[in-house]
Length: 485
Ligand code: BES
Ligand code: MN
Ligand code: ZN
Image (cartoon, rainbow, N blue to C red; front, side, top):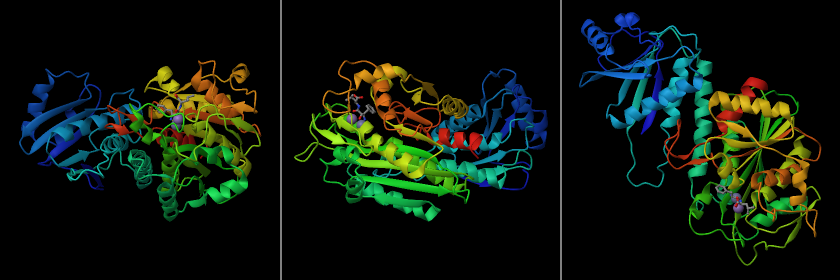
């Protein structure tokens, strides 16, 4: 099913179709007389007497053609509550086979800016589904016509919502694709298409990476018949050369574990091990679509972690782009190897204002935080607090986890500068982050988001119906919007 939203600039009188009206927290309906018939008004008034007004969404079936929905916007609602309401409305549409709705934005005076926009945004985000490989597709199209002169969503805001939806959907599409389709060669090609939105794309293939010396990244991909890549995605929205914000993503298109092979059960989930990179791509697409007034760069490391005759072995030692040597004790701790080189590369090449990396890095973060919070690790309190705030606002929450030099001994190696796993055990997510920190060479403010528990939802969440969530696109867009634009 897809949802088409049409914005009309006129106000709405009465309609014979399904009608959505906004009301205050007490379901005060006096002001609705203008928009519904007398009989409808008295019918609703009567039923409201016995309704649970703590609810946010009440529906009144007038006849087979018409249902009236009252959406209650509580005084202290957060914008994310209103988005969830829109998503709840989607659940209704899913059950009912009605395909046209009218939204009247004139019906309520609310102080919450753009509440109609947030409602529709939640509805749209929840409607995403990935059905590319289903022979029988759900072709249903639901039209939502938005009328009203009050609470108007400006063209600029319409564009912002749309850009964010498309950015999120792009990330979800990439994450949903299986490993046989979206391998690194194909992924690099798809990112190249982002050129058409005004993004500058640079693709570093194996030959270039070898010359530069990104051997930690290359080692992970060497067992695969596919290529390994580093792709940079630049958005120059300020038309000057001020330092960009940098976003770095783990793009392991499939993670078998390599020679340190993973068990068969749930290995299929490792098709989403490129979610960090997909979020970066989705974010950059969103920035371009809404022509964000910011300079930003996305950097993604694309590899496939396979066993094979040429695969990296446990015990191998590689020299990373930073010059530091790494002893690979477990080929399944591959994400940090890809990110290590990508981070050094980003810092050196772009001298960014900050670097934020996203990665489905450790199973241990799922043990710690489940599917409610992503883990946040950072060398900078200001950046951390900005991220925590943005996360609260868009309900893509983060929980800060520790970094400390005392963890360093767990990854110091006898044979090289460091080793890629901690043999003592414990603090799996922190040691991974502590490892990454060693590749920030010039004290750039840096944050690492471990999104292993957030990127994919088996059962669905507030704003997704299950599958790829796109977690991170809205969070980082909010951070940029609030603190850097
Ligand atoms: N991609 C995995 C982490 C992961 C696990 C993501 C479950 C999403 C769901 C990562 O590459 C990995 O294999 N990590 C290992 C590290 C270990 C070998 C130190 C892990 O978490 O077990
Ligand atoms: Mn792994
Ligand atoms: Zn992995």
